[in-house]
Image 1 (cartoon, rainbow, N blue to C red):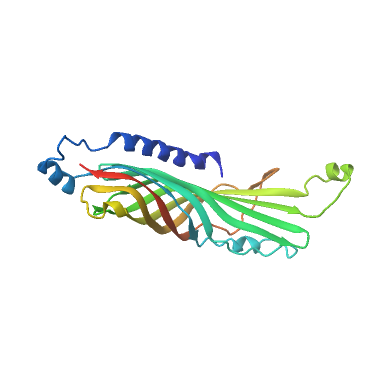
Image 2 (cartoon, rainbow, N blue to C red; image 1 turned 90 degrees about the horizontal axis):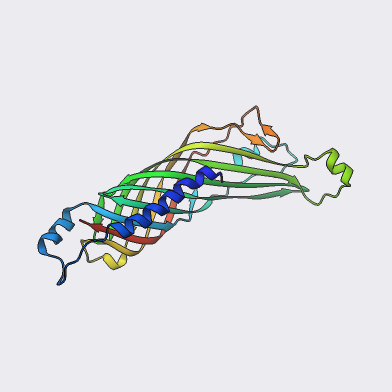
Length: 252
């Protein structure tokens, strides 16, 4: 994954650390006043969340195989991804990011091997619609990109030194970066906050589901430069991710 795809993840970590340390509710000796309790029930939410996010997607990697010669292995769809998600919540406004890896797969036919890897990174904005009895629900919109790397090489080959330096391109890596928009809805549950209206804290589990679409693609490249033509492949897809993590979201 390109370095610029890591920026949202780094920003989100900083936001989590800031929000967890800055938005704790003050508790007076003897407990919260009744007026404070009313404000919390109907007020704005502040806090931070962080999650491990495994999931599946519908990117059609098999489309790439249509552009490979018949001697190459068939490309099948591997729908798995793993990543991380982090948000800061300030007055119900959600700001954060997500990043991770697409596990696209390795494919072999005779002595030819194709290895597909991918990554993604997004800057995310959202709004917390529900914060009640341990349940959080919020829509998100994100901007970022997906990276694809396709490493093509031969296996089980031997050659003399002169043969290698005379014909060095026995392997190459093809790369592409596509700019993406993502729209999704997330739902979380914090078991230990089920009986509280003051917010959600501790361990949380939930999901994020949505759709991502491309709006621009950089030129395809390989080890020696740009590829002048394009292939009909895109990262448009539905996705769903399991969210496992936690944090603290309080009402003020």
